[in-house]
Image 1 (tube, rainbow over the protein chains, first blue to last red):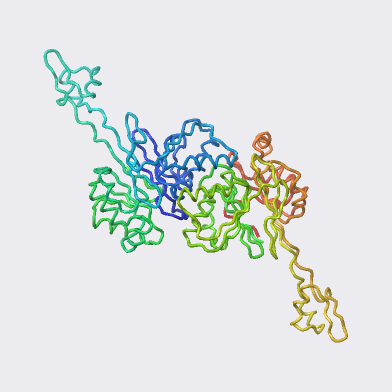
Image 2: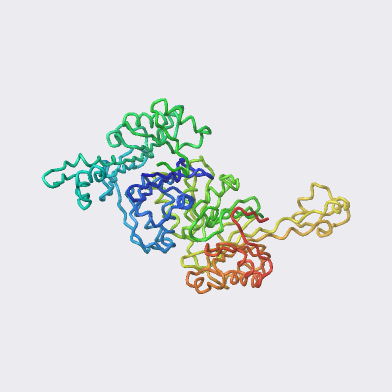
Length: 299
Length: 299
């Protein structure tokens, strides 16, 4: 699992301060999460091939999470894309993109599938053999979802030496991976004597934008990484409540209560010159905190 | 008159290759012309105060000329703008921006005036005491206008020495500027003996995107600067015709036939590594050619 931060700043973009966008590499998928203005250039800088992006998840329809999407969809066409594209986002996203394409007298020469969201409950929006993606209902000024990306449990891992010593033929290793015991002559070799448990499935939760919202804790319990917005510091808590954003302390409280592995902070307001204040405030509540930066790669 | 090139590249944006946007300083106005994705960051880099931009002219609704506008309009609000904003562009621009604001559950806390264009003729879209702006109907895959910015003729300029020597009191200089003769005792001092002609009014024509379209020549006759798109070189003339863009040679032909002062080229396709090919091709037709670059200032 690898996370590339394409943009982690709030509201108005500046040079080297890009609005929200992330790329999650997980089990062979490259999921784009949010798409603020300038995301396609950030993808270029990160040397991400556009064609590998097949699923885009949009949290909400504020410009700093969404206004890079029309340009990306257009660029895909100009670059001759043929692979289908799936876009998951709040109801209205299809109307917006369709109108913009119509006004440009344009189209896509690839299949464009919209998966519009309007449920207030957590729903599964994507699933295949290796990964599931669920929404995390957030609390913001407009309908907003976070996203929980969970690997499915993999195969049991073979203890080569033990398996061969027990006389198991390599042709039966696939059965071992599936958890079966193996008959070797008169002896039944127990699976757990010759295999290790699968690697624990990785989980990543993206939660932005949101006010402090403890109801999300059960959804993100024990995730490896939690990206939680921290637009403000506690000194501006009233402003956080008014605009339905979080403080660094609130983000850390969620991380602590959900017992996550690591808290990733972002969506910083540009009013703060010293970013380390976010780290300091969060670490008073929860020890494992990383401040994200545009271009950073977490793995 | 000063022109800041914020972006002069075509189609898909890259790092340091921004789509179309320009800022024209003329007679105290700061006119934004087109607004491709990333324009607000380019304005920041050029150290342009957002509040001085009161009129935005959009040529057409292709993304590389327009997809920076929703973000800019949103940023204006976030920054507390109060000054009215006028947007001039093809019919549909109001519907697009209104829908995006509605989906974001947002608004503007300043007056936002849309001046939607749909005429196939040249029309005056802005006029005050010092400047007029006219559309220039272009030929592209979608309804597109160029814009002609013309200064109005200024006051006559006083020849201080001559005026004072003739015994004219400074309190009458305003009348001299307006072209009046002045009675000094028994002598009528002729205006042109104590004044110079006004500076000739400056004119700037922006023509992008467009196929080679000689019908525009009468509209842009004798302008000081002509920005004309040159997406392609002659070697790709068929592609230019198919996509309704121009070659450098075609842009230069327009410049020559319109007897402009200087031709500014831009909207280069990224397929060409050597930008000087555009210069070479154009200079074979017309001598005064400038290749624009992102961030360049022409004055």
